[in-house]
Amino acid sequence: MFKKFFGQFNKGLGIDLGTTKTIVYQQDRGIVVSESSVVAVNIRTDQILAVGDEAMKMVGKTPPHIVATIPLDNGIISDFEITEKMLKYFMDRVAAGRIALAVKPKVVVGIPLDITEVEKKAVEDAVLSAGASQVFLVENIMAAAIGARIPIQDPSGNMIVNLGGGLTEIAVISLDGIVNWKSSRVAGLTLDKDIIRFARDEFNLVLGEIVAEDIKKKIGSALELTEPLTMQMRGRDIISGLPKEFDVNDSQIRVAIFKSIQHILDTIKATLETTPPELVADIYQKGIILTGGLALLKNFDKFIAQGIEIPVHVADDPQTCTIRGLGVTIDDEHLLKDIIIPSSQ
Image (cartoon, rainbow, N blue to C red; front, top):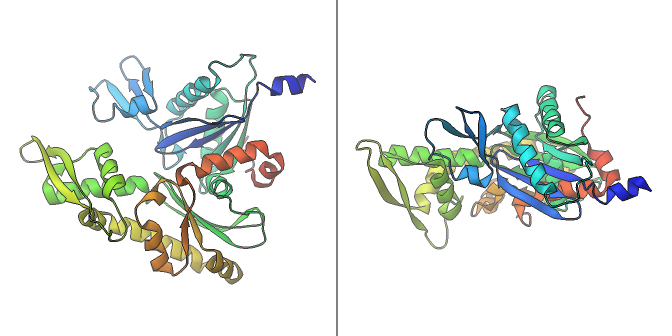
């Protein structure tokens, strides 16, 4: 009876610890936090000034004693202490306004495919230190597949490409398990760097990361568009040091990011080449599912489909597939038991 009573207040949490964005799902409430994975720290006093979107606004605009840092690198914790404080901030915010019974939630966290035991332990320790009672680890790609409504339990091949900010993961899933996979660090942030490099080489212009990302989202594309797009690109002139702006079009950005999107395509091909033929036949019939923020790049699905001659589909709301999948595992203990990764503890 007591377990049932406390269970009303102890709602499980799902956490998608992304390189660019951290998303938190709470049982019975849905997505309650979706903010940038950035923390602003005053290095003189070691005080945290802002977390999430508020800290993101400070990127590139801080004095020397304030550092806006991303404590995650390619989905892996690079700064344990800052990650712990960021998680605690988000978890406390979720708990705010709720009846406080000192009941710590159980937390399901998504992790990359190529994570090491040391890195796995760092994730568990950070979440426990932030206030969790139990931590369950699930591979991001499996959570994304569940969130994209792929029938992972079926005895047939399902291929999913999770295009994140710091990591691209490709997997062939069958019978609740990953049969074949590859990962690449060429992902959304790589394309931002491509645009920054293009601006420097072609226009002698220093671009900020936020500006580059905005250009990618608004006019970036993998194939030629029916209607050309143009926007202004503002930054600092390398020679004069003064502010400058240039008009840039979708064709120029397409050239800038081509090598990176071609690398992703080649990685998908390499995964298919090492996949059992029976599963490849299933994939050929069903097609490939794209999830993650980079799946929203214009015509990226068509670009991949042309390269491998297999149908490619973008999942509904691809940016939230992973967190929605983690949310499903919180509600379905049998499914969680089938896909959970052994703890490092």
